Each structure stands twice: as structure tokens, then as C-alpha cells.
Amino acid sequence: MQREKSSLEEKVMEGIYGKKEIKKEERNLFLGEYLERVIRYLTYEQVIEKGTYPEILEALRHPEAKKLIIDRDVKLSAANDYIKLASKNGLLFKRIDSPDFKGDVALVVVSDHAVDIKKREVLTRAESLQARGISDKIIENVGAKLCHDCYRQLEEKAPAELINYSKLSLVDRLLGTECICKDH
Image 1: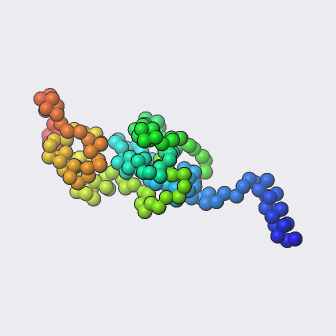
Image 2: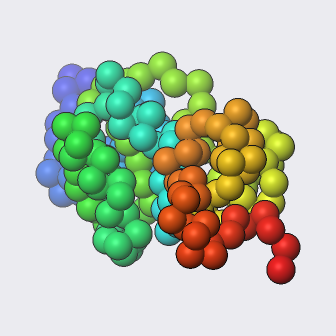
């Protein structure tokens, strides 16, 4: 009889306060998703940086990836490239907000079930490229046009980052455009 009463009490409490949420704190850290469903995530600072993180492109192409979720506090202009990439890769996209969200996670690529991922966090672009020996001038100038030597350095040490840079063309050189490595 005690067991039934406990069950009845639980039903009454559920009716009054709503269903008990499992891992609510964890879900509040990852835009409403369970950590085990997260493939990769970015912080606010990373999302608003110029350029696209290749790790997110890779996550969007992951066979288990189902949707891209972006915090509503992130401006659409900052997230637009990621939204386009999600659409191009056939993933659903949604913006979400909640007063319960905690932390600085602003973008997550998730599956609809648990995935075995060792590293979900993405290092900042600066940390990642510095660890690979890329020059600070290249790191600080995402989107820049690079001379042959700088482009080759990036190609050899961080080829996935090439999506954020381009080579100086003959026309660029004729018009006087110089690589960022040239000191003025």
C-alpha cells in the first residue's frame, strides 16, 4: 500500500509541478540538449568571430548530425554562415532561448540520440592555429588574401582553415594589394 501511495503522490506532484526533468542542469548548459547528443559546440565569442570554424563544418557533416541549434541572443548576421552550412548539409536549424540557460554555449550541432564523441569543445581559432605554428599575422586576419608562402604555410599546417582565407591573385597584385605578412 505504501508503494501505491508513493506512486500516487508522485502523480499528484507531477500534476502540480510538471514532469521531473532528467539532467536539467546539463541541458541548461547545452541549449536544451543532453551532452551525450552534442557533437560539437561553440561559445558566443567563437560564433561572432569572423570566419567559420572548420570543426563545426565537420560536425555538420557527421553521419549522426541532425540539427544545428543557435542561441537566440546571437545575431543572425554572426550565425548566417553556419545556418547556410547546416541547410547545405540537410540539417534542421533552430534558434532557441530560455532564462534557464547557463554558461556561454551559443551554438551546438546535435544528434537525435547519444553519440560517442571524445571531444565536443572546439578550441578558439587562435589557440588551435598557434598550437600548429601558424603566424599571428595570419591568425589575426581571418578572411585575408595571402601570398603564396603564407597560403602554403596554412595549407601545410591547418588545411581545414583554408575556407577562411584566399590566395592573392595576379589582379590583386597588379592593383597593389599586399599580403598581411608584409610590414609597412
